Image (cartoon, rainbow, N blue to C red):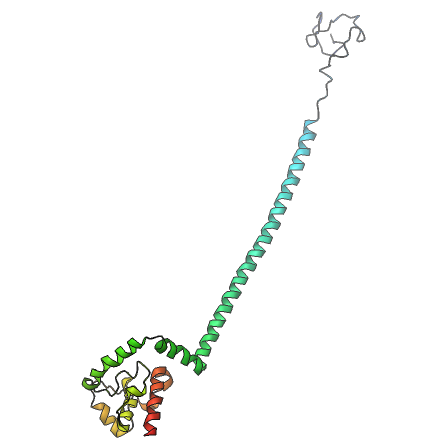
Amino acid sequence: MICKRCNHINNDGAKFCIKCGAPMDENYSQSQNINYNQPNYNDYRYPNNNQTDWAQIIKIIIGTLVVVAVIVLLGKQFMGNDNSYVATQSEQAASSSNQQSQGSSQSNTDPAYNEYNNYTSKNEYNSYTNNNYTRNNSSSSNKTGGYIISYSSDVLLTSSDIQGLSKQQLRYARNEIYARHGRKFQSQDLRNYFNSKSWYRGVIEPSNFNDKTMLTNIEIKNIQFLKSVEDSM
């Protein structure tokens, strides 16, 4: 038997529908005693869950793609700024290196620059006490070590350092600076003089001796000073 209300199939002879409980009388009319306010659970239409789920999934996918795109764009911008910063730092380092190279080049070519760096740093910043200490402690070595001026390679000479020296002694004092570096001499009197000194070791030929590379600026300055006094006598 089919229930006229819910169309459920019941056993023959059933007085009530086992599903909705409606009487199974053959004269029962669907229009009789029907409570239209009572929901018909068989015909109730639920929302299409599949359609709703797909819409939400699509929205989630679109939102995810947007977020990924934004992250990629921000990452590219950040990397671009970072590379720009690194490039700027590299340019600054290169500029600093170039300035140092230029300074080094100037030091090798500009006499005034060399004179300032060498004489100022080695002499003007050395205290007067230290210079006097060098001179005072070298006075005894002048007598015992066979030097005319033993400190002529250490400090700039003044008139007081050569007071009382003869022209020949000035010549020895001037060449004494070369002799300390092992330079040989062409003049026989200079060879005889320095060969008699225990500290002298002549190993470099005069033609192979380069004043600019083998002498300090203090020594070159003292040689010029002694030569000028020697020539004036």
